[in-house]
Structure formats: structure tokens, C-alpha cells
Image (cartoon, rainbow, N blue to C red):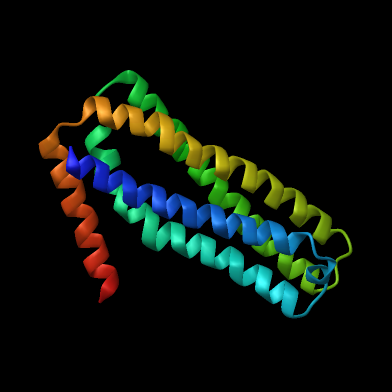
Length: 167
């Protein structure tokens, strides 16, 4: 099961990076400077974009084969995959809302900063729970339901994603 261990090492490393990005966003929200146009607001906007790009370009493509291979193996696994897909979509929607709210903050809307803080708080909580579920429940399902040959295929797919990204 070396392939499974390798795959999960990659996923957990990426989850750690996502947690770092969330912490960076949270730290910025603690400073009042972001609540008006300027470098702090620009920095927060860029941090949100980095998180979205990391998820869409780096993390998500590596999991496509894993999730497709797991799909249909058990009702519990399918239910989990459906729930994770909904939560992932919610996270993406919340991130989009936050970015739109930052535009309102920049335009001088006095209520947008509080709304953005609330949206990002919900996003952070949901994203952290999502990552925890992937690290625990999803990991458990994959360990139980996937064969060594399937893991080899998953890792091969992950490697091709890395190669494409390197070009």
C-alpha cells in the first residue's frame, strides 16, 4: 500500500497548505487596515485568490481519479462523496461572495467589511471541517475500499497532473 500512503501524504501536505492560507486570511482579517482601499485590502484579495487557485489548479485535479474510483463502492462512500461535493461548492460560493464583498469594501460600502468577515468565518469553519473529513472519513473509506492496483492508478493520475502543471 505504498501507493496509498504516497497519495495521502500528498493530499495531507496540500491540506496543510490550505490551512496555512486560511490562517493567513484570518490573520489579515484581525487587522483593521483591510477594511478600506489600500495594500491590506489588496493583500486579502490576493490571499483569497491564491486559496481558490490552489484548490482549483493544484489540489482538486489530483483527487479526480481517487473520487471517481471510489464512487459506487458503497452507499456510505457515495453519500460521503455527495456531501463533500456540496461542501466544496459551498466553499467556492462563499469565496466568490467574499471577493465580491471586497469590491464593495473598496468602493466604500460601510457594511461590506462586516459582511465579508462573517462570510469568511463561515468559509473557514466549513473548509476546515471539509479538510478534516477528507483526512479522516474519506481516508478510511479509500483504505477499506480501494485495491493496490487502483491506488497505483490513482498515483499515476496524480503524477500526470503534476507533470502537466510543471509545463
